[in-house]
Length: 374
Image 1: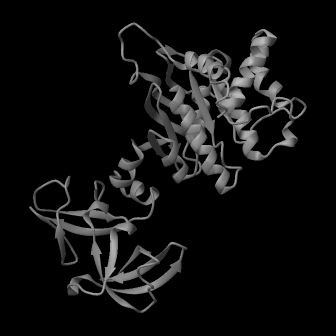
Image 2 (image 1 turned 90 degrees about the horizontal axis):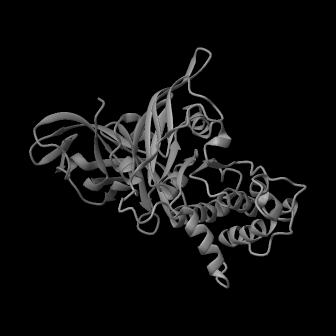
Image 3 (image 1 turned 135 degrees about the vertical axis):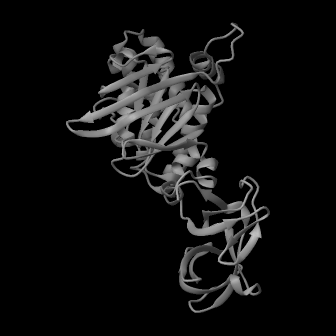
């Protein structure tokens, strides 16, 4: 960000997103966007099925799920581009179910950028203010501030075909921010960028969202992107919410088989839990903190990074390597353990595994979880 003239940028944008002041109320955790019993049907096809969602003020919630799960439809419902078949949508406590997109005080950042090629970047960014009838001097000043926020100082007079894809996405972000929306919506905004640009853009999006405390809803198919930008992640499948929580919670404590496999790789075992240990195929290890007490049979999951290989161990821990894939800093290793194929991640600097090698596996409790659905 340009620091030569910070006053103008901070004066306008901080004032724009500061929110209620001086009334003694803490609004930081107010539910700012709410969907109540929302169902959306297209003909006989139910795309969203009785969905309830509350997004606290100033939080970034990402919708994640397989193709066709309904995540983009939820975004379009909040935007006003679709109307629910049943249910209500609230923004800042007001029922906006029947309001158009123009009446909802939201902005959307699209996958395609949606910039006008015949306009300069400054004209693109200031277009919304021009449609609102704002004075030219004010538009020009706010365009400069918005460009500074996205690290494009002095780009006002350039055109779309003169800048890169990553810069185009920054312009699209600046165009949304300049209108001071109550809610910012992102529809797979980084999917057209290469890996390095995606990383830098997601950092910029997260930085500005937190800086100005903008309530945001983000749709992506990229799990790492969802983890990086989000306060909370909502995973959907077949129009229903599978789980909502912080990224760490969804990865470490998945609520179902679907969640365990969708949020990364998972090895699934039958197990017996007693008062102080977990028994998997005769391999006993300490009962992890958070596992309910009492003897019972259950299904547990273990993340690949929580399993290591050792040259020594008990017979119940013996396994045989069946496949090895070199991934740069690590190997992805498949082993046969009691007739079950397991996936492990092995540090490439510590071990050079080969198919047919025998080792003893060790399961570390930090990567273990109990699955509720049997």
